[in-house]
Amino acid sequence: MNDLEKALAGTFARAAAQAPTASPDFIRSVTARQARRRRAHVAMLAAAAAVIVVVAGTVVGTRVFGPTERLAAPAATPTSSLAARTPPVVDKIAPTIRGIWPGAVHTVPRTLPNGKEFNPDAVVDGRVVVGMARQKMVTDGVDIWSYTLTTRRFARIARFTPSGVGSVPTALVGDGVVVVRWTSRSGAEEVWSVPITGGEPRKVTSLAVTRPGDTFSRGLTAEVADGKVLLNPWQGGVYQAPLSGGEARLIPGTRGYHLLRWPWAVRPEAGSELAGWSARPPGRRLLDLRDGSRHDAANLPRGLEWKCGVTWCIGGGTALRRDGTGARVVPGVAYRAYYGGDVFSVSQTAKDGKRAMAIFDPATGRTGSLPYPPGQKRYPTMYSQDDLMYYKWGKQWLIVDLTAIR
Image (cartoon, rainbow, N blue to C red; front, side, top):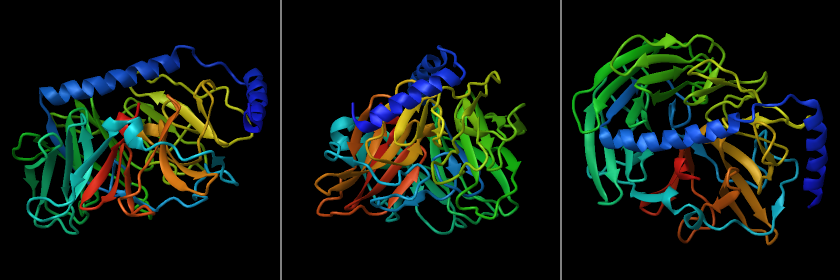
């Protein structure tokens, strides 16, 4: 046991005596539901899917509609509320992510058949990458594309030509559908759908949203689940509308709450960042949107700033489950949270001076480093979403499917 672990052990013992006790079945239920949801995603996609097109705001993240966030290459001390004052030094850089989670890493061409740059937005079942042509203006229409990893071929799903838009769209996949968003001049968030096999887009719903001054770092979060689309404006509140079409209505009891990952939403503590730590804000107060039950974090040591996602909380270089169990030392400096706060990127500095960005999964304790592009010793710009990150790999994109980290 090193000095850090000894200090934490004492802290945990004191906190356990002071804090309330969480339900012993809660963490197991979250893990089981997460596994079922991943399996259901595959089954629903195989059955048949629609592509959801959201006309709307700006922000970061696969489900936070707006430009995909560009992440700078990791520095020795990343700018983050989670970063320690002195970056911890690891014995050696973690093995490459390809060797730890081979099913999570893919490469796709950066150029579409029509010569435009492909912008990947989602990986479906580890087999298909869905995205759009990268462009500055959408007045002439936007093509939605898929790329099949086994055949190495592109296919155009549909062309969408909206009116009154002014932002570059992004897409996401959830429960067998692809969601694409852009901003309407009226300020409304409009949701449209089209079959994944092709067809004419149709409107599903719309939601008027008041935008903050910093529209790049905050905006609309969305998810598709259980036959409905869920919309979550930056100021909080979760709205739902049926995929068959209809009004987007506020789910009772969700004012001030932010969607992490269906069916979980959190109410951030005062002063919590809405951007920077993750595309979704952290929070100790967790709400089950299906039945309104609360599952607040408990047994977390005092004196540390804890950031909590669906299952895990992180602070002071340590990761804990929401009930205070399963302590793991973070193998580096926690840089950013993904997939509802259950997967983390960390910046590693080794004793020999080598540095790398890595992905840390506290559930398994495994860590995989991101490889540098061939012939390079620095990372290019990294594009980050809630469950996907990618960067240039020669004439291709190297994609990390964060939903496959397990």
